[in-house]
Image (tube, rainbow, N blue to C red; front, top):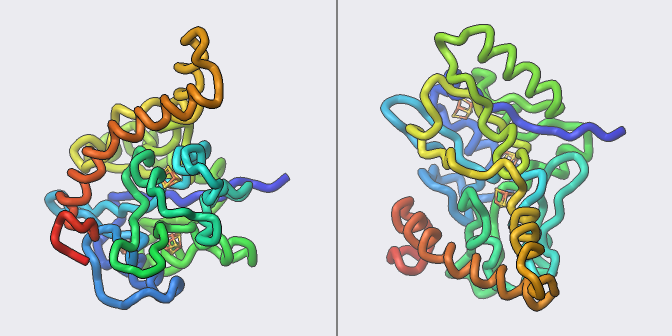
Length: 255
Ligand code: SF4
Ligand code: SF4
Ligand code: SF4
């Protein structure tokens, strides 16, 4: 049986060298310049909180909301873990940007033929039996690639083995139903910009369950209306986040 792959990011080991971003850009043929936030030319970026470096990237959710809201099925969750994107199908509606609970997808606002851009978990490398480029490049082992089950076991061993060092939580184990990117840390996740109030139920399932309790609303039309309502309510969050992180949204003056 195919084992689901993942990455374990141990924030206590990250030294902020940015080798992960450099390797990612090289692998994905992106401009070499260092970027401090996710963008159409940056699939992974480092935030810093008083000397603690935090890698940001697509979480590769087990039940991805980006895929569930995409009206044309441009996103696919691969059995090995990566959530990949098909530009040929994308119609540019950007619902994925509004829906992503981790505010990850970026849009090529300035391009004539804009695409959504986000980490694709090196799915081509994975299909050849290779690890992700960022994990291979990480000099300290802060980013480790492997089987999700084994990485979870290792993460538990690390945090329970040194309870004075680590917060007793693996971020990504259960958030929105579980993700392929797992984090452990010595600083509470809420102090590092992580959303710690996310449901453990996958959001697509949550949406459906909420709908199913409303008599007469369980229909394709109802699902679409609910989806549009939810997406609309996410727009302001996304705009605020992009402005705060100085990403390529036209409202922040960057192209
Ligand atoms: S983090 Fe966002 S973009 Fe990545 S798989 Fe999850 S919902 Fe999709
Ligand atoms: S998994 Fe691959 S695409 Fe994603 S950040 Fe790492 S190197 Fe980039
Ligand atoms: S390569 Fe490893 S140590 Fe360097 S910034 Fe990335 S995760 Fe941290």
